[in-house]
Length: 287
Image 1: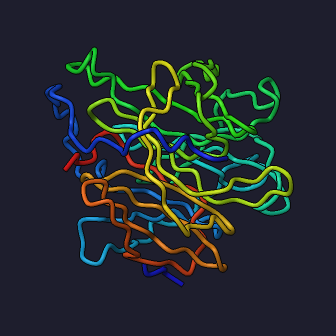
Image 2 (image 1 turned 90 degrees about the vertical axis):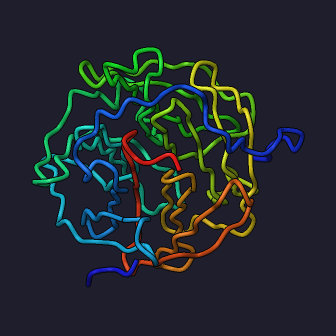
Image 3 (image 1 turned 90 degrees about the horizontal axis):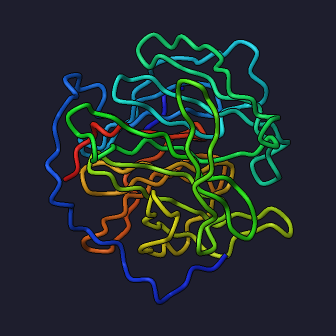
């Protein structure tokens, strides 16, 4: 069926909605690079288009990655439309997950190939993922793949080289960011979404969006999202100046739009499939 659509320091101010003065050079000629891609528990890849009212999902097709273990946990997509999908194993999303590998997926053809990322080398950690544009080399359109390692009480920010697939850590977070998914922008910003998750003794206490300094892993700003429970899966994307949060508290996915300028949240879409991972490239509109 095709779908329809640990505590954070309170003194940290709200997310700054002002864009940087850095000029953005558009190296994205393909409009398909501006949509949000999601993967469901079914294994299907979808496009989610926030530009429509209401935002809708469109089926791309089944993703089948040879040799993959478990199911998709997170993903990120580059400016060329190549998605990097991290897989994990675990009996349910409410229990501990173990990273098993990263696969490269062509979002047009759905062709999937393994990468040389060695999950065991890094302790089979799981992580959220997101590309961020390199504003120091705007003309070249460079971007970096960031990961947010899942760990209690604080996770770590790191990067993965998409040529060598070596993981290098930046630093632990300076606040309780434990189970975050990431999204990045074309003007060099990085954001994390942490939902309310119950995993026995390793549980979060509230849902929030945080802006992260990519160079230091420091939490710059945060906004609480009361009432958002991860359920069977959670995912996150920034598009057009707003955030789109995918949660599945009762066996299907609800899409919540958060507007940082008005600090308001509203459910804008839903899906009968449980969305496990979402991503958007740094080509996506900033406003």
